[in-house]
Structures are given as C-alpha cells and as structure tokens.
Image (cartoon, helix red, strand yellow):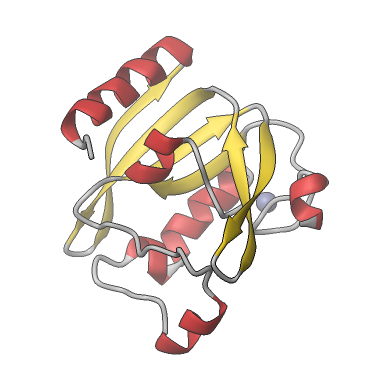
Length: 148
Ligand SMILES: [Zn+2]
C-alpha cells in the first residue's frame, strides 16, 4: 500500500519519477488493471531477465505461494505475449475480493509498449511501439487477436 501511495518501484523500492513500467500479460494490458506495482524501466528489464516466473516458458508459482496469492490470482497465459508498458502515472483503487480487499493499479495512457513472446528458452522480443498513437495501434491489434 505504501509503495502504491508513494510511487515506489516494485523491484528496488526507490521512488519513480517518470517512466513507470508495468509488466503483465495481455489481459492486464487490455483491461488496464494491474495488481503488481510499477517498476523503473531497468528494474522491469532485470525482472523479465532474472525472474523465472516471468521468463521461463513452463515455470509456475510454488504451491506454497498459493496461500499468499490474491484469491483471483491468475497465472500468466504463456500462449500470449508478455507486455512491458510505460506510463507517466496511475491511480489505485481497492476492490473487494473474496478474502478481503485487493489493491489495483490503473495506469494512465501508455507512451511506450514492448511485447515479448515465450519461446523454449525464455522470452523473445516480438514488437515494440513508442508514442501514444503507435501504442494505441498496437493495443488495437492485440484486441483483435486476443478478444475474450
Ligand atoms: Zn526500481
């Protein structure tokens, strides 16, 4: 909660002044809702390079971790791209989950977006867009491909 209010990086805990970077799946991106806090761009890059949950095609959270996961936690859908998206700000809201309240981050419009796809050895860069118009076009393309 404190890191959400103070705009602190989810990885290194230092203040983020700009380029707040959210890492998530296509569902996060299309619903514009995240449960993990933003990171600095270099911290996000390190996370997707070093965190096995994010970069391994078959890694799953440890069973013990299920206890501490939000009730509505959904594993990353690795048949879809991983999205690394950059914004200038966000709002937070508390929503009611079955086991209490859940903090959600609602990013402002993106100014950069990179997509990575899962391959046998990890993540491979797929496409990238910079600037509001280009990012919106890429997201529109994702909506077409992954409409739920
Ligand atoms: Zn950081």
